[in-house]
Length: 127
Image 1 (cartoon, one colour):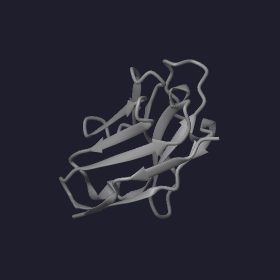
Image 2 (cartoon, one colour):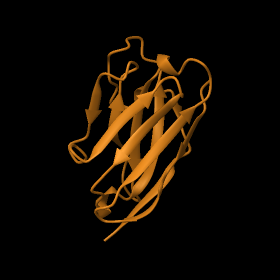
Image 3 (cartoon, one colour):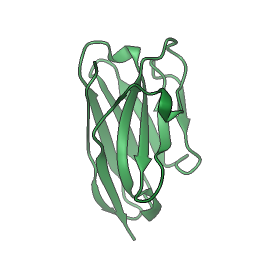
């Protein structure tokens, strides 16, 4: 069982930055591929960025490429999402998720493959 706790959300003006953190419980964090997803009101949950178990490989949605960066620190059981040049359309609840991926270099983009989810953190970008 893995528990995920997100933090770092808040209200920011367009063009600003936020850094989300997600801390995982347990001692097997490096066994999990990690992902950040978001869900805006009235919309389906969508993938934002994902990272492989070893932190080498990453995936970004087209809408955030060049603005967001996902990283992980396996020693701290933490995955981060650095969000720069934020836009009002980035407003959503952001969730981190963990998938017990069998291969340390793969990235996982489908939300249905993730085993554990955090409670979410609200990000609001004002225009």
